[in-house]
View 1 (cartoon, rainbow, N blue to C red):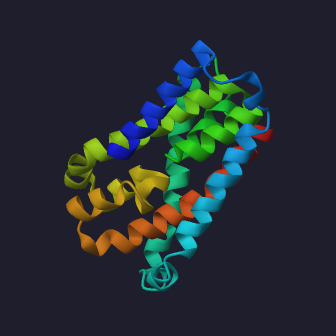
View 2 (view 1 turned 180 degrees about the vertical axis):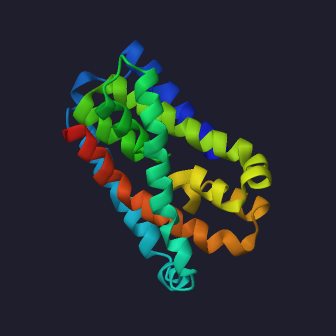
Length: 200
């Protein structure tokens, strides 16, 4: 929750800086988002490589649970069918690009801004932050009415970091490894899925 509030704060600060011309134009290079994306991907790689227990933890998973990330992706896309019918002013490709961020707001919004423009990139940022916040706030209800797997699936790509403490608290420590696995696989899929729909 705190991390999401910090991200929103920086987003609002960026809007204020843009409106007031606080940052010189020559610093706002067209490739700035590409540089930020490369730095972000580097940080993701470092965080994964820095934990030697991650790979060994994946090996302990029940084989049935390895399908959870696929179910999360397909479930999100199924919901997007309804979204595309309701938002007739957006193309299906745009809706699927935004939804395929799976909660990974920073990475998906940079890709979408680069390929589809700042307006849709902003929408992607807010939509994916909303997914994370709803998961955090609704965690006890999701576990109570739908079970621990529903909480992990709802978290999407965030279950290996920001949502992980909530999973441990409401679903139990035994679901921590599954939560990390889910987050890792869905996280890894985001660049491919988002660019796929952006390029259609």
